[in-house]
Length: 208
Image (cartoon, rainbow, N blue to C red):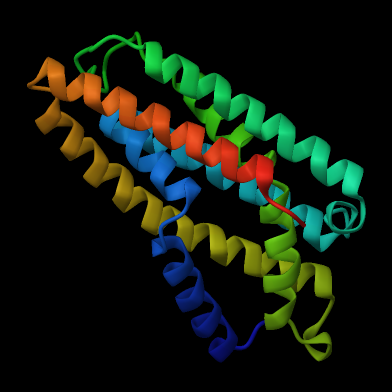
């Protein structure tokens, strides 16, 4: 379906986009630093699951709704902003706690996974970005457009896993260092709350 040249070009572009500072990779970094590598990787998997939803929406034309409907776009972005404000509130109120080991049963991996999904799918800008970005690498002469979009979305997700997975591992290492100080943990919680608050405000004020 896709030529080798298209695959290489698209994958390289996807890696560079993943490395560019943005809400998602900062989110993974802060969660890894706060909770450890395993939870950070689980958040990353949730974000990537959200990308599956956006890819499917673009492939089958659903994403066009958010591009053309101001009501749908506004409703979804405020749902996402509200959820991020909720996370910010809890981060600001969180006490200094030692980072739990990845084998600790107290870590709710399902909640972290769902957190990643919710943050990603409630950002309509992702669907609109995919709607503008993915079709540029398709060729009608190479088969059904929907299949090509799904393949490109899959490549983008692989690139995201590589980049965000690395960020999660680095963030977990950073967290282990900061874990030695209660003061550092309090500061990290405040940083995480500020990140959530900033992303919420950016999402709430974003335009189509």
